Image (cartoon, rainbow, N blue to C red; front, side, top):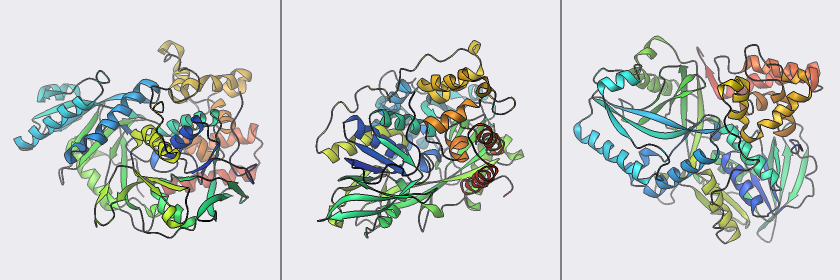
Length: 526
């Protein structure tokens, strides 16, 4: 078992690559995977950690986008539904079917008929047999199926199907492992700080380690800016002056104790905006809002107005929510494409920008797009870069790695089920660490399904360089009421016991973890 290269810039100075991808979210990971699969020597760098940004701060749905039918964007919906079917088939440990209830209250008849037509069209656009078709339930059936949903004014509800990726952070790691196995270099905690150009073309990118300050210069004739909502800021940091490409829109999510057993899509009573209440990690996630962000993606923050808005919608649909407060709130930023010459026109479709007119031929920005369509967007980006379409790119391939074994049965135990769900085909790597030394097979926390070996695996095989990397984006332990603080302390104890950390490193890691959680979340009562 060979591990990936470490985080930071070690060994990169003076190296030549065919392409450098800047940005380690799902789209950057997908582009690096596709480049490497097509034989290009590829480097991916991410200034924080993989899936730190928008990829992990969304409603975690894999869907065609029912709401996009209102704009007659059938192509976007069809693409999403096709990619939904692929992910359900190829990464079933991470992407699972999700039945959603859509209750109808006192809406006028024309509105209910419009939604009926939309659901019928949604089914027709879906690949045949990928998920069940929608159906309608009367009041009594709704009450029996989901007693947590308010019956006040309820007329009926639609039951339709989409999919959920409970841990998109793990989807990114799978794509990056596949990229690495195809020959790519992958580094987190590395920032792209400048370009070297000659005759109007990019020749190299300047890099800096964000944890140690070390610098390097990587040579490449192609650089892909896949930093999502940070795309304009990345271009400015690389020395390009141009009009902004993106309008930044933030959305918050509230996490409650479990309010319902099923996912519920509901129209907010104030503006009929479609919101979602999704079962997640034993809790219910509610989202989302839409509010412009000024001054860059790092300025996004949970606001009292957004919390009030989501609380009002939640309490209308779930009476039990009236007696409890959200456990915590989080904020993410989406990038919407500005259409040149149209003042307020934006789109969620992706955009490819060739920066030759900016004096940087070879630099391309990819912006916009959806989590669901990461694979097809990545293929299109690489087609454009190489000047020809590879019809095999969207063939029915696997994401990468060894074949996925069958899901363990209950008799195999909760630990085996956790390893399959989180690590999929690579669960055997974690088991090998545990089997080699009984100390690593012990639970990380009392009454936890997670084991110490997962920490070693995250550091050795998955580029984890900080406690936040391990707890929040490798082991999925940062989502409970304490936001992973107990798990962070346990990971630090493992680091001191077996990974060579001293007391100063342990204290620094916990302080950094607390700062990151303050940035990412608004705890209850804050």
